[in-house]
Length: 369
Image (cartoon, rainbow, N blue to C red; front, side, top):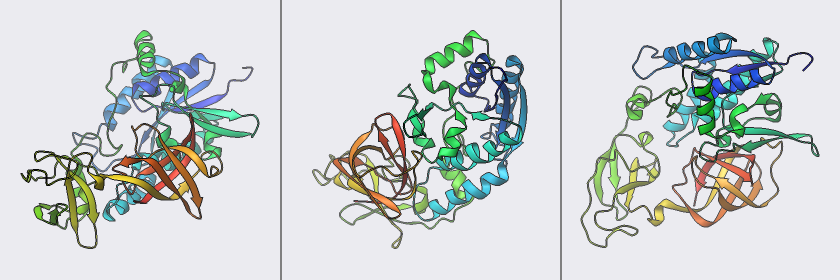
């Protein structure tokens, strides 16, 4: 390049963003690192690792010879992500705040900040790819090449404007190759474990965290026959398909439960908000856990427009195989019909549409049937 293009990289302290910065520098870009602080309510707790992560990010910047800036987006995050997260849980749905965080913070607040620093592009360590379709002039969001790490599901709410200014350097690589590069160039975080869980909750017990913000109203747990078999601590604290933490034993009645034997585990199957009742069933394959259709609203099309009605693929939760479906758009949303019933389709989660490797966008699941 005759004049170095400036790229601002979101350095999280993890190995993926560190290798992304290294690859961009190797490609001749003028690279600046930004560490985003998005949560500060309990910064000194054992579960909040932002201070440790910043030290790791700064150490990476030092090894790579790039500048790093610490930027606080906590106020934006609380207003635009966390408030919505609490509203959804209070309504009995199960939101995915990482999707909203990407759309509102990492590719909006962060992008705006990077542009003020004179950047032409931003980059993150997500496993995804962006490709310009020469025929249409539109940017396409593609799955990352490592199928076990693909994160396009979390990025489906990005706009064409955001995609046009974004690079995903590790999207072309497998995780093993990223680790190898980090080790080879002696990055201080080469062997750091991947972070898991929701960004602001980290590894802490989820129910303990929600307890601080959501009021509890205990009520009955009932089985499919209408028998009360336990007490729930508040419907907001459960999600469809949940198996752990129900606090109920087995009802030992041979052949009583469809989809499972007498010792089969219990799963959350329905939440009746009006009657404050949690319905549970035994057996992973119980019909109450399966859905042949869903309705979604609050749509966002990273492809630039809604797809044509017809056969497409869908993910109704992260880390599931693409499921064939019949897509039908309607005003404000879309409907999906599945030839093969889907397990634990959950209102509040995202239904994300794909055409092969291309992520088209999606919507928030409103109901299932």
